[in-house]
Image (cartoon, rainbow over all chains, first blue to last red; front, side, top):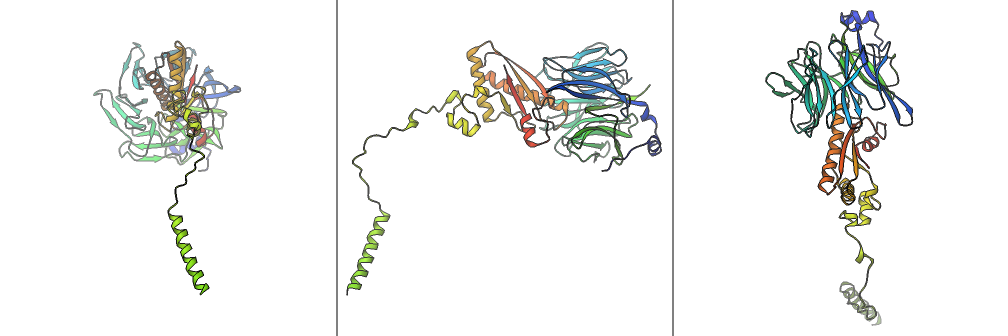
Length: 288
Length: 174
């Protein structure tokens, strides 16, 4: 599919919404400083990649950034010498703290819509389970306890449930956990694998990575899957704040690229302001 | 008359030869009745505790000599199941750790690039833990730590089956 350049005016006329342009995005940039020695930098820029600046850096991998609802903080995954940990960095002070450094894998943080909790995945009990961290009380509560891999929690817009990825039937599929009655229901049934799911702002659609490397959108009512991309290595999709666009990472001529597409997949453009070994893009909430 | 006789002779000879061909006579070799000593009498069928001969280790699993020299185990896509080659190598390391005692070993789990990064962190850990369990069960009396790097530290960044195969691994690090 040929890439189209979206101009502000064209886009506004197309979607009727200017809101997306007052938002930002986060991503990870990796630079090889010496042979096999990499510097990882967590970057924040305008939604189109303009004005990128570093908010955190490490000699170990960084991944999975997630915005707080007020846009003031980023949760992300870093590493210490024991393994992966969940951290939060304040985007005004640049002060960072570790919120989950338990035994095993700590990963996939997801801020609740009211900002009071961070869901994440940890495997201290043998296999990765979903945990919830209360930001105020600093308490951790284990939510799931299946022997499969449970990871990638992602809250519904009103916070009454969250989606997550589970391999409980063998390969990763999307499930939903209801906070009130603690019930779990399976959401995806098509294909071999679905993962990294997230809701659009009105909760009517679920964005996900299908078959390991294709971006897809599932209609909440019909459960019909629409492929947004026809690739093999696309990853890290996120909706714009108004749900009209999707940001994701792809490869173009073997080079990493960040792409913004309309949510129906008809129009897309590469963010040419972002270059290098970039990955893990995440669209911010609206600027408040 | 001679021709007829010749014909009969030929036929008879043919019959005899055929008979000879179908029923070989036992050959008694009176010279070599000594017992034959072959090389294979002393072959170790449990080289390095593997349950295989040295040549089987090499030809079946690509393990040349002591499995202790091999420190990378490989896995199938989306799987943490240990194949026979991995079992042999991990068991040998466990035996070594059991003998030495007090050694620290770190098992690093990895995944190929397909699938999401967070899920691959979990998959890498599952691989490392499966190896750790095997080694503990096989007598390793040591501290075995596991760590997962998911897809973040590939040995080969290409988008090929060969690269993915090389990346789906657990590394044994002393």
